[in-house]
Image 1 (tube, rainbow, N blue to C red):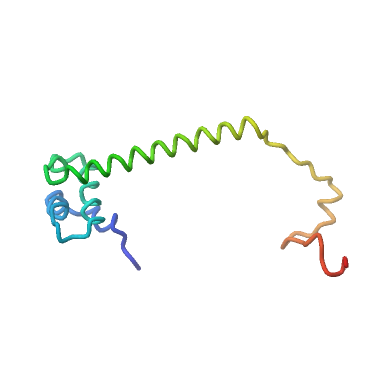
Image 2: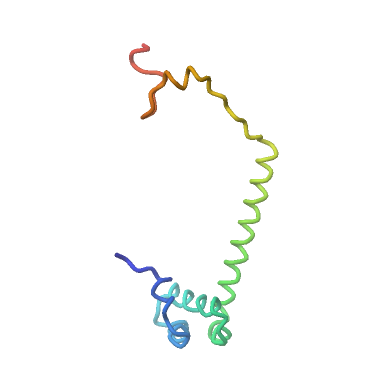
Length: 112
């Protein structure tokens, strides 16, 4: 069982997160995750001068994510306007004739 970075940092104290964020020997991904946790906790350590670059990077990523989500929502609205949802009625006879189970091929070697 693998424990995710988020799970490992979720129980860390703010001091541990601060120290990890400042540790230049640590992997940048871990440092950034530690700073992100401090931001989520809204802890004063998040404003440490050593975290300036990581804070800017985290903010840019969040802004980009919000922009992408906004674009996706706009596209979904446009698609819903252009392509109305159509209900397909299946005749009762067809429902009874077809056995339930795996899909049936409409073209097989018997059709050749």
